[in-house]
Image (cartoon, rainbow, N blue to C red; front, side):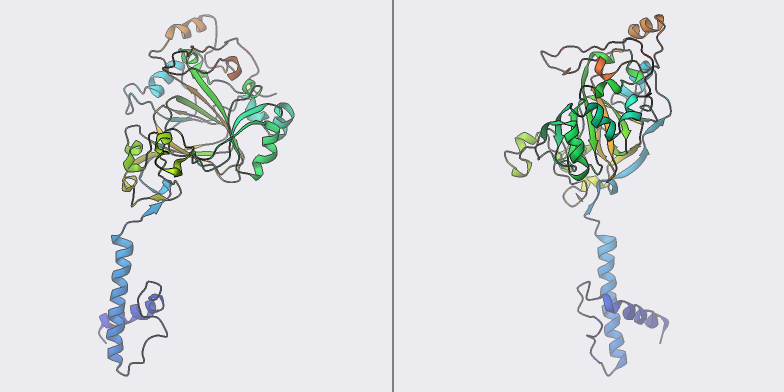
Length: 388
């Protein structure tokens, strides 16, 4: 037989046992016993062509209709990684505002390796230590779902010892304001030692879980330092001007109001990508996710990241891996207070020292709040910031 016939016949024979899987009528054991071999060859060849067309349509023509959030869009690379910390002025200009840079006006996210290693918490915060030293402190809020949906009500006022009894065998996940006592063992990073950053401190939160957490896609109105004490977290960042915050990509601007029309959002709050399942992004419904650009970041033990306000992000932690981190939310000043840095240096202060514990500061500043007071921190020099 001609070569093309031999090839077609081979394809048909090899593929015939899978035709039924794809919905075609031919399967092994169902081929009539044609007396004329050439008729059989023609029939099987035609079915092979039909099979080829169906596979081509499924694989090459029709796009994938769903994927995880890590599989969609266009990865531009890892965010900047630094082995050192910037000075307060460099932090203000390069990262908070990115003056003259590609992200000017929006700030620049970055990873600072080992920035939290010198804090006492990095060495001390084992479960045993936390139970013995801080077990009676109250955690004001504990989430009851590791995959965030913002639709399940949290538990409130749980003692840390009780949390430690439960968190390895349940879905609970600390999002508590940093409890008293623990705030003595973590510090503001040196880039915030002067410049006015301590005047608008909003909130500090303790994140703790047994791993496997997944956030919603969201952005924050505050500037954010996030430091890893134990475990790992993986981040995705999207530029503030990207279309993430649009209905075309599943964004809900006011979940409370939307819940009145959609029972699925009952008890949800805030603005976030409420229509997007990070494990199964519906690309038929939200095709824009196919082309959106993003950056990734892996935050390891002792690392800190700066997340500028308005940058969209998603965060997850590996399953079955103890995870502890904390964040510091603050609002930037309109200008950099150079005088505060000059005065401290005149007094012989090393601005690269870890000088200000979180417990040294007042918190609660709200931008636009009529009764919101400026915050402040004590700045007494202290030795021995590392664990003994």
